[in-house]
Amino acid sequence: GTQVLRYSGIHGIGMLLANSYRLLTEALESQTRARLDALAPLLDASLAGRVFQRDHSEIDSILNQLVGSKFTELDYIIVLGPGGELLGRAGNIPPDPQEDRSVLTALADLTYDTGIELKLPGNTRVGSVRFGLSLAELASLRGKAKLSYLGWQPLPDADYRAAPPPWF
Image (cartoon, one colour):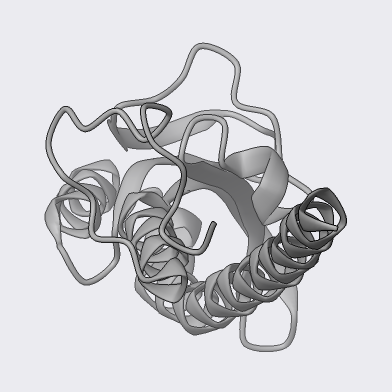
């Protein structure tokens, strides 16, 4: 009797947690996409003309401002010319950044690695930008939301394995 209830309770909580995790992951993916959609035109507008003119000092200045801003949350940025030549870079650039296809793959290093093409009006390609969008803040909110959803408040150095959760 009680074992069946305990199993049903554990199974139900497991299903609830799985659904909660899925919803949080979808929200994180959606928020990241929205941030990328807002950032792409900013990068294009601020860099395309400078890349076309090969204005290295202005490119470096813009990159340092972008990486240093709490509003963009960029870990790094690399600007390449139309032939792939390096025109500027700033931030903590990983040795071999690989483009992330989803937020789940990016959570390993908390940086969403991606890029955009830089184009002038008339759709003329003048270069590209590779950058890493920090997921640290969003991942932190995700972790807090999971604990809050469960009704737990994390305690420093707490060992949650020592006693069963309060619903048992």
